[in-house]
Image (cartoon, rainbow, N blue to C red; front, side, top):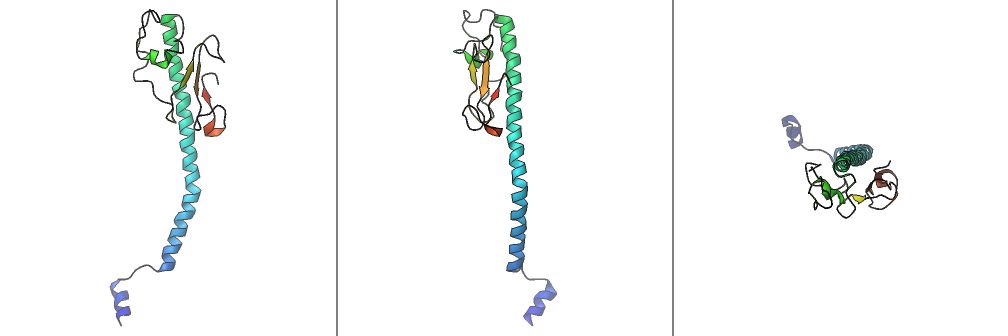
Length: 147
């Protein structure tokens, strides 16, 4: 009689089978959706790195116009934000970037070399991607100023 009363009042719960079916459906959806989400995060970081390279390129070119050469390796990208000694940059008219030099999208410092190994007349600017090592594919691929 109490069973009829539960149905009549709408009280009751989910059966174990119903809970297992819901969990299975959620697991299937997660396995389908999560690779797409992580791929988009990876693509976004690569795009952000390429955009940062372009922004640095504009700032470095402005520095070169004012000082007749790119900042040397020892001054690095900080020369775009903070005035170096007047002997190193006699015509510095910066800051050439508004904020502190950001880390790459994977949280590592950019590698800046001037004159560059790949570009002996200018500079090399490199992010080694997610793995932090030279080379690699997809998100581990290097993002450089010359590609």
